[in-house]
Image (cartoon, rainbow, N blue to C red; front, side, top):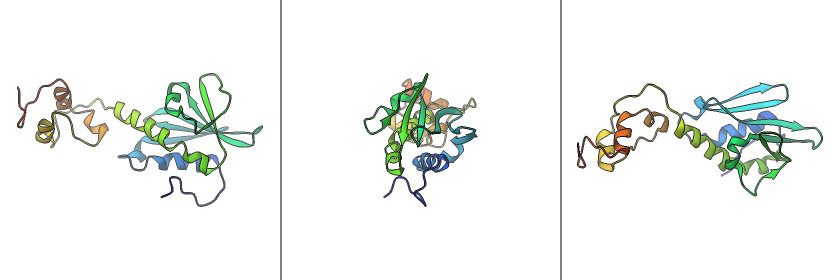
Length: 170
């Protein structure tokens, strides 16, 4: 199975963005939480409204590169990437071809999951339809992380207060 499928071998800022977008296609509602902004000098990529990368072209190197804010560079600490000299607050990595771009899949996927698990809407609710199963497991089993972060019963479970099922202790 190819990680990054492309119709042609032409590497462009748009094709790099599309590959990063598709790296996360197995995530719940991924298309809702990944967006891009076209700039004069390239493309900016956002996960959950957070700027996570810029795709630019280096005229001197005649190659595209991905710039990652230093706040997220830990997700890209791999020997698989060809680093460029950093600039203030940014780590930069060359993308010579689609094969080198595939090395970024795990890093972008982990970064997406980091934001997904941290993201929550201010509108909390008591519990969902899985409250009995969650009680029996002593933890939230809701697979939609964005949804589970809004569940108030999850906070009770995390604090050891179980209101339902075989493990009821309150």
